[in-house]
Amino acid sequence: MQDISDYYRCTGKKTALVPTMGFLHKGHVSLIKKAKENNDITVVSIFVNPMQFGVNEDFDKYPRDFKKDYDICKEAGVDYIFNPEIYEMYNKSLTEVTVKEITGRLEGKFRPGHFTGVATVVLKLINAVKPHNIYLGQKDAQQNAVLKKMVSDLNADVIINICETVREENGLAMSSRNSYLTPEQKSNASILYFLLNEGRKRVLENNFEDTEAIKVEISVLLKQKHPDIELQYYEITDNDRLDNISDLKNYKGEVLISLAAKVGSTRLIDNIVFIKQ
Image (cartoon, rainbow, N blue to C red; front, side, top):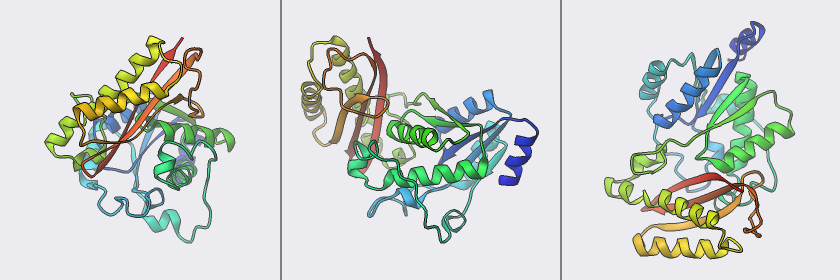
């Protein structure tokens, strides 16, 4: 892959990378379309990264269907698929990439080591593909913040582009893990997007001194509508270092509302970003 990337770099053509773990869906296709709009060559990586799965997480059962992924990429006009084996990526590797502070909150509390796995594999993909641009979905907001910080701190020669979350008709964010859900669970999970928008409404009303009262109201709302869904966290932060907004009334800037919830045995994440003036 590096030889191919070097060739396109030498010819002055812009290369885009869309990093994925496969089992592609419309959200991935939207990233591919964005990549193709603004670059000459589009590469999709398909690699289920064991380093970002914790003990007792779903690495072994994570959905995989390379034939389907290949067909989707071909239909979308992808130029190259980079599909390395695990031993190619991590053979005798003793090196990890760790971004401090912002990885210890939100997802980091529930998935220790996850973002070290993400940062390590993405830096390896950057070095292998040598893209000018990377395209990521907004759904993974904390991952995006981590990777932006890594790229900035390590002076990586790449631009990270964040694209809007693609959603099901009921508002549920598209995810490969949605395949774990029954039709009833998928319908019930639409409450998550509703809760995010309810939080945004409360933030913009400017009637709250801090975020804690909003979080209590959201928790009550969920228990009233779907007590079987377990809300693991619901946080209202800035969209840079993911710090909690303590003085909500006087805060101005981008607000990120993030949540994680278990629907049955499936863990889902989602978020929204908006401006508070």
